[in-house]
Length: 327
Image (tube, rainbow, N blue to C red; front, side):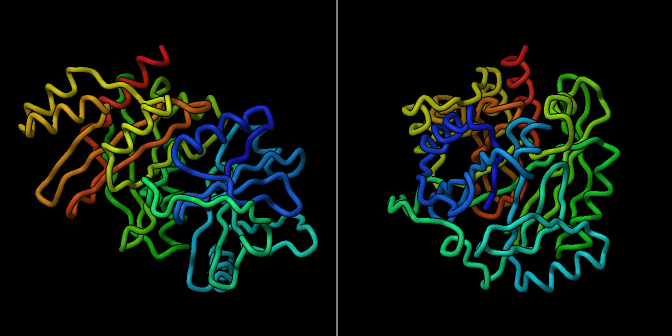
């Protein structure tokens, strides 16, 4: 699961967004102001507790991702190993009967929860609302999580992930922002079930640095969902008046020049504001939301065949589109 800490005033906005994406409210925490939003095997939590860790995070950063839960083979053993490698332990006061989850501190004001088959938190901590969810829905799983930080922090956090977890890192690569260069590096497990993009920049006016300033520190800047039908998803989001990041005609002229796609496919991409990339291994489609809060946004991707990239050639177009909307 991924947990958002939010103020009560912003809760309704996030609930609306989740409904537009096909999530349903399937549970409420037994002792805390936390709601569960579910679609298939995707689980989001919205935490509006008026005190404690989540409240402190909202006070410091605004609406933010505070908790990321990883499923591991043995949570207790993984926790002991993480602490032996100098990870910072995280402890919070639990209500009577509440599940105790081994937890370490992560990037910014966030934590990483370690779950295994012994942790049935939905039965132990939540009351079921009885709502039935679409299964499968249009969204299947989290493709990747993008965390933005100061460029000088990237080496430390890459070391954190690759030391504590069974992950590998990509080479650093440049993302061209209209106002400078953003460095990016992907941390992933070998089966790519977990993919985390670390982004940082020493350019003061890049979108990465503006995000850090707006949330006053490193944080999750966007979440990318995987879908098996991005065109159906785009139509649904348009029908729901969901904020989709608009692309220019110039972008699709560029796609035509680089890949010469079928005209009907290009027309469908343009109608849905869908971006495209391909390599020798497969094809890749992506769609972005507009900014949700403090620069946080969502991405939706469809991978075909064995494409493993992240649409890097599209990043300048996405950044330019975001800049146009914010200027």
